[in-house]
Image (cartoon, rainbow, N blue to C red; front, side, top):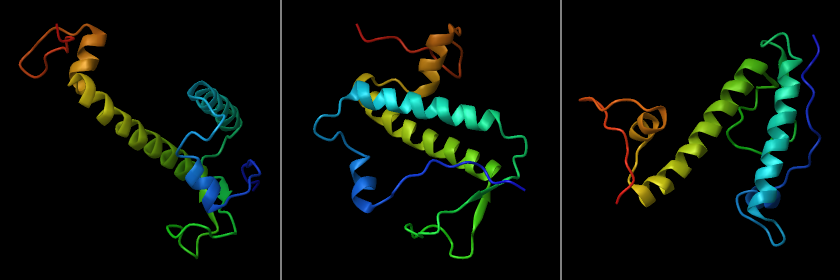
Length: 129
């Protein structure tokens, strides 16, 4: 069974920590562009995978404490679910910031965006006047 192709990258604690902030010379537009590029590359790789049970090798360098030492590979399914949950978790952090600015939580914003009528369970969000 073949393994899933992986992007070659060197990892270090400094690079990891730097990935959480804009470095000198970086712009928000540039970082968002890189995110879009990586998302497209990820989508292209996923489109070529026909077996979600296919193994994805765990990096041999054991640079993270949360990877059990007896794990040599994860399934594509596990990696995709992990990617979804991590993206959702971090998008949730952005929601916290946004909610502190406009007091709108997810469901009322969704109701407003979708044009749902008001009901006892949800009132569509309206911008403060």
